[in-house]
Structures are given as structure tokens and as C-alpha cells.
Length: 368
Image (cartoon, rainbow, N blue to C red; front, side):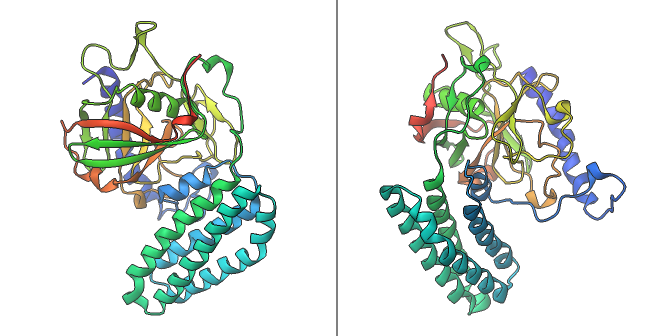
């Protein structure tokens, strides 16, 4: 195990303990300590929703529809059938109010695509409402319709994503950059996963990973760290180097710490949230979902990440919204959006058979 992996192992073990401590804090009133007061509301644990919420969309009407649709999931989870039907009616009212004005603002081709997505949303909403009339007997059907509804919502919202919203600082111009989204298919000896990379929130971190995927760097590497119900880690190449050696320089290519604060346009660079004194903010991409993908690094150097990455799989229900000890300390750059069940099957020594970019290649820019 390399020094980078060893250092992260030690910190990660502390974080795992911290997760359970944080869960215990749920029942403790912390009125006198604002920095530790629990945020209101439930944590969002669906990676698709987290990725949607990270999109650079400024129109509040889109987010009002998104919030109303997301509410359906919680009521479905707890078998609140009449509440689900009420949620559906609220979404339908919002679509009645906003659909035409929103479509009128789009170019014809995008308006047509958005109109199809809205029609699909309405169809799935009806199916959900009808299924909940049968209560528990219709829950499976309602859940399947909700999953399709979320996919349709993502298709709808993509029509309001414009050009990449900011310039990456010049000092990092030599690093690969992902100016948008991309998907990576990870075929392993334990099964297949798809990782959605978010360049809007972490263009350098996601770009570094996508570039290494394109180079075939991860093909054949093993998962050299597996902690049951916590995380799996890979990306340590054979030989003395503990990261990707750039053939142009002969040195390990490292990337800066890069974390975007929720509600801000650009990421913060070079320091953790702790080092920046940001005690009461949430990252745009939190460690709230099973399958959170982030970069490993030396504990003492936030700018030492290279090629080793880890996939977080601790039980998200143990961590209250905005109170995860990993948040703000490691750079998250995406989520597993297909095949999360494979994470539970991975054993120490399992291999990455192949890693391939299956979408978003046009968003990847090579370093200057």
C-alpha cells in the first residue's frame, strides 16, 4: 500500500467512526453551538437528484418544479399514499402554470425536446397517482414510474443548461478539464458500474479522471483498499509511483483541491473547507449518496491527489443533511448512477477490467 493510500486509510477510519458519532448527534439538542446545529430537512441521498441540483440553471421555476417532484419520493418511501397524490397534483399545477412560458423562452429545437419531456412527466405523474390508489399493492408500480419520472425531469432540465458558466483559473490551464458532464463505464471483476462525472462542480478533478480513463490508465488496476460498508479504492499503479506519471515531465501529475460551495458558481481551490474557515456551508456535491466518487490524497496536503480515487458506500441514512465529516475535506467529482449494487460485491484484489468514456467526450479538454 502506498503512502498516499496509507494516509487516507488512517483518516478514512476516523471518518468512519465520525459518521456513527454524527448519527448519534441526531438526538442531541445543540442549541448553544450554531456551527453544530443540524441543518433542516432530510439529506438528499439520490445521486440523480444531487447531480440535477448541481446544474448551472438560474431559472427558479425549474427548481420549484424539481423540489415538488422530489417530495414525491419521501412520501412514497413512507407509504403516505394520499400525500403522494397531493404531491402529484402540486406538480401538475406547476406544469400548468410554467410550461408554456418556459417553452416560449427556448429555441425551437430545444422547445420541442422540452415539450416531449413535459408530456412524459405528465404521463408518469398519472401512473404514480393511479398506482397509489391501490396503496401497498401499487407501490412497486409507483416506484418504477417515479424512477422514469426522474429520468424525464433530467431530460427536461438539460434544455436550460447553457454554456459552461465560468473560466477555470489560468494557473491550472495545464491540467485536463471537463467542461460539462460525462459518463464512465467501469467494468470490474465484480460487475459493471456507470459513473457520472460533474465538470460543472469539479472541472479539473473530473477532467483529470476522464483523461486517465481515455489513456487506459485504470485498465487492469486492482481495488487495493476495501472497507466493508464504507468505501472501495483503486488507482494505484504498479511500481514505485503512487499516481499517474506524466510522460511529458516524468513526474507524478497532481491536481489541486477543488470543491464548489452549494449556491456558488465556481469551486474553491487549494484548501479544504476547514482551512478556508467555512464551517457552515455545504458542498454542491456532498458525501450523501451511496456511490459518491472522490479523489484520495495525502492527509497533510490537499493538493496531492493524482490518480487514486475512492467510492464511498457508507449508509447515507446515518449521516444527517450537511453533517458528514468527509464533506469539504475531499474533492467529490461524481456519483455511481448505475450498478451501485456492485460496490457491495467488490473484494480486495478485484480488478478494473476496463474504464471507458461512454458519453461527454466532447466536454473533455486536454491541458495546455
